[in-house]
Image (cartoon, rainbow, N blue to C red; front, side, top):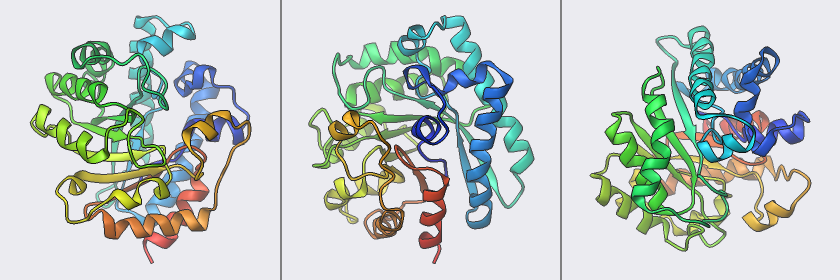
Length: 297
């Protein structure tokens, strides 16, 4: 298991201001670190009862140079905050991990631009150069892997994988899709996964889908296709709304937790290697508790 929608949970459920949606900003003081620690423990308590392991995802979705600059971070301070994020998760791991419950630390990488819109697209080479800063820093920590979430066009995803490969650190790519099951760039999920694997010699450890409701992509999944076997994780939105609708919403749509749990259960038959479950926008630990109750029954 992994966690849910960190940023939306903190903003809407805990009334915490996150400048530019940047949860990593909480790492600047003791109070913020404690907020994050409690957040993760809610999920770990559920996971230890039901699962054999947990992925601690660092609060670094916005920790890339452009977004960090907007809230006053230099490259030097950004380097430091990525290292701090991993160190804080190491403390949690040391208290919760045992031989029967393994914990991996992942440094989350988000898109350079808007996760819902592939504007100002980079070439593969540009994306590799841009994200190399975060990835090089991560490779110099005790993180186990990098997870690139909400990838909405393939050039950026491929650039991230190339940078991870050069820095010898495992990487996971998680695509987001629109209500038609296609990436915001218009590519099909099948095309994106097959193309990325071909261009990177299948370096990606596994693929995920995040920031979309299962209703948006279940119908495009074929359990007998090789490309679906590469998808091992789902971090779905609570809401069935489109990205455009969510972008315009001023309130949090927590969706139907029981229905979402059943949708996760249905995905088992469509994704033979599905083994990592978490949430995205609108979800919190209560959603994951409901999903686990259904998943393991």
